[in-house]
Figure 1 (tube, rainbow, N blue to C red):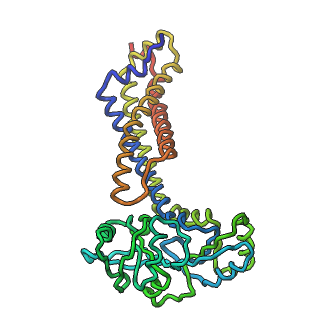
Figure 2: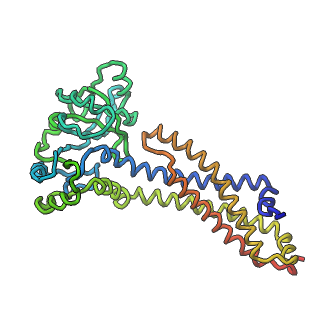
Figure 3: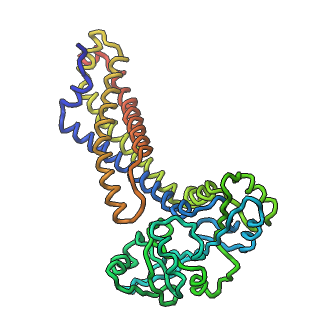
Length: 382
């Protein structure tokens, strides 16, 4: 019967084992949280993009992200509408306004979208049934998933109270609620008609829009229409397919801001912390049991066998330490999502990535620790 030497050595000092598992769990939690925040950043940044029903999107070449848009002529949409295969086009106005909390009067920037209320092309819960209400002057719809700093708008509205506040220097009335969600770029969202939007921004030209949405007839090849648009439209617009439109936003946060680097660095820090902790545990274990290892060598056990014992210990620590890290991270995800309104959730991809990093972390520590074991000579010890 094969003796589980690695397991027996680890469980001999139970306090040391618990400390090791706590350290690995902490490193895993650190990696989970950094990966979670990074994914939440990317996912929240394209929530609106994914909700817009369209096949091709037009943006100004000067636009860098949804939080930094430049305008282009709406005529480009009319030109696109002339192409065979294009079913309909929709302009979107987008900007930030200062919203005053109706309870505390605290000002805070909120994203405002302006669309034609006759157009039904944004698939957001609560929007379709309330869209007619923004036809009224100075009436908006409020995103009930916005951060609580904007005020208890949803609660007041659901109680049947008339909710009014000031935004963009005008008195606005909340005519309904929808559910989109906050992002790293926008803490909250409101939506109104294109006419109301332009009332809030009197210096904006009605013919200049921020996003152009093009919907195609069923079965029409998207790439073919995109190529045709590239030919007929001037170079004052960028043309994206749906996937390219989403990737455009994600790439901004990945490459043009420090946020992506910071989260990646956080994962790396957790990885290094884990290596140091596991190395200390394994090195101490090898040192404490050096006479026993030397005895096994004298009995004829090879260095390869003894190295295998240490690597078995590393793998046991990896999987046992991962379990509490995974469970606690799930709890932290739920708490953080509730507090920040960000789409923070455990996924198979994140769980797999962290377990792989944990195994690499522990085996790398084991590889460093076994150097002392390979140098063990029975003659020197006895």
